[in-house]
Image (cartoon, rainbow, N blue to C red; front, side, top):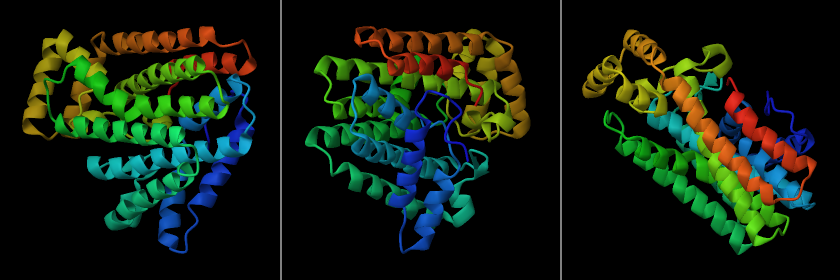
Length: 323
């Protein structure tokens, strides 16, 4: 199981986060534990705990116990959303494994997702009111982003601005909150906490755009899931929107698929081939790079350190990743 393939000098802390997550999901109801471990054990980039740890150390924080606890809680919230997202989207595979509801059953997965949320908020509730508010606000924005995306499912007219609002809520705000919480635990200056939060917000937008690019142009073996998932689920993403706006064939194909509210594998392959023939993927990457560059500019006001350098490196890795 991989906890992330990025060497940013926090591998020991991330292993502690993994251990803490496993402790937190231990339940006398073994099905809850098994579903939780199935999701956790699939690994992932662990962007949220990584960012919490780096932000904490960038402001010279050393409260390792609290840092590991809150980083674990943030990742458990993320894991809970993945369980529920797969149910909502009818997904079969997550990170190379069967989606939890496919492996254990629908009822079991729904309850286990709720369990993950509950365990995360058990830990979060032990912290200051300010940190609890950050976590609660982040989770609220996540739910709002998910609902906005659901509202626009099979909407072939979705705009770039609407797309950005969706990914701000569902992806960028939770990443922003991870940075803010790590910085707050270090008792950083308000302006430094804000700077790291804005770094996280912009990094989160860049991260999701690249995710959506990989769903069009990535390698299925590296991704651990089929490409074209967004198209199959009726979700317009940035590469699809840009291709629609730039190319008549792409616009016609997307409109046809979305009007039918269903898509075959052959239609997915044909549409992705058309999208790849436009400049949409390249333009999407450049937009993501702009957000990543904007993220690093917020770090200019922080003191130089190895962890600040790692945050800069993280913004590069987010753009250059292949899974």
